[in-house]
Amino acid sequence: MSGAPPRQRSWLEVRWRQFRNAPRPVVRAVASSLVVAVVLGAAYLAYDVALSHGASLPGGDLRVGAAALYVVAVLVAGSLITWLIVPLPRGSGTHATRTPWSAALGLFAAIPIAYLVLVVAIQVLKPLLV
Image (cartoon, rainbow, N blue to C red; front, top):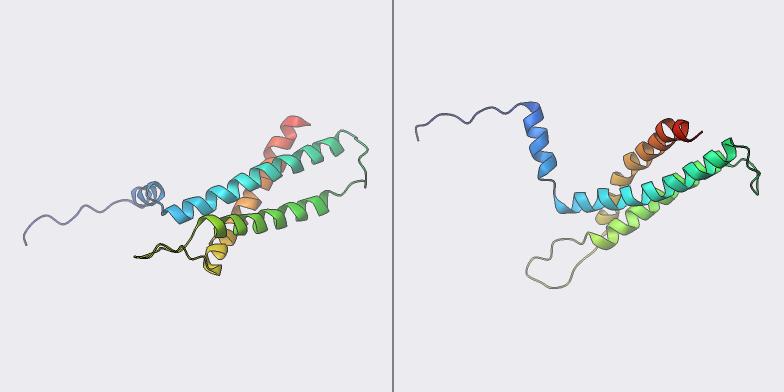
């Protein structure tokens, strides 16, 4: 067993390889939460911009409530969709099993995505539209 030891990869090389080879359940959880967050974030941004332009909407200014509803909806939808599309490995059987762990994966993926999409909508896109 003689030979050169394997080359040490840099931190960036290791992270890039992990990013390119992410497990499918994680990709599905992130993608489902991202799609829901972008759609609901666009709706929240439209509401926020309409209020900023002086639109008189029914109920008045409910931005805080709308933001809270956005976060809850992204978390619930991300968990539910991930639960639906990420079954446990089947092994030798044909029956796909879903457990609360799939929903937990979706929840933990949805938390940062909901925050990041809302920050981009409010801090980056809103100033461009107002």
